[in-house]
Length: 337
Image 1 (cartoon, one colour):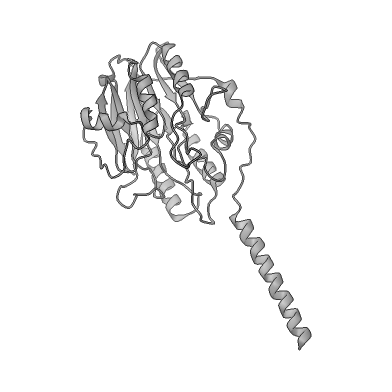
Image 2 (tube, one colour):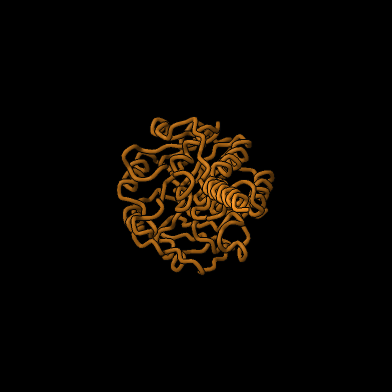
């Protein structure tokens, strides 16, 4: 009997060890299988896209907060996104941050699988697409650099950065129409969290690089990054509202006070026509202020906080490539599945 109990104890201990090993393996984040190095982005430089018509359509997707490709919420998000992509005419896609959740404790968390699902879906439409990192994207299961390096394997993915400045992505996409530069899109990384786990802010070196690039271009420039600046609150309270873009101020748009540096350094630049962000899950806004549009897009997925109150949507921005006046250059549409 004693020998039998000893065997039982050994078996139970072995089972416990096996369970612990399994649990640790299950909790370990999946790793990206990278065929490209992030450093390749430095050699790519700015990109050029040829427009087929004077109406250039940019579809913006942000705050989907995917944790994998297989949960109920993720499948619903990806299915609805495909519905919108199938029925929408667009010329370029911008993934404007928080495509991936950053803090999920679920065992189903699998960022590489989510990145593959997004890449396979979007690249299949044969249109150029890019990524402006959000505050959540690089927190767990792979950095922003890993995500970008992985997506470099897709034919239509555009990426670039300037070595030595903050952030994982910063470059221009020049839009040519009828043999000339007609518009430019600037992609920026608004960073994630600082050492104290507060929201980080866009740094001076990034802004200086942006300003230098704008100065080289004698055309309107649209800027896309993820987290808003305090000027969005000023535009909301003092600017001219665009169409029927209702906004609930349940979530603040001015809670990153250090981003005022971006506002101060870019305030006097006349050919900035649009600053477009995400991050705030309340609803879309678009306001004309300081001779430019401040446009914010709401959540885009069912994994995002607030999706029980606000239905996921996407923003289609149509740029008139013949316009020189920022007020007349843009049309904004909010798209639902």
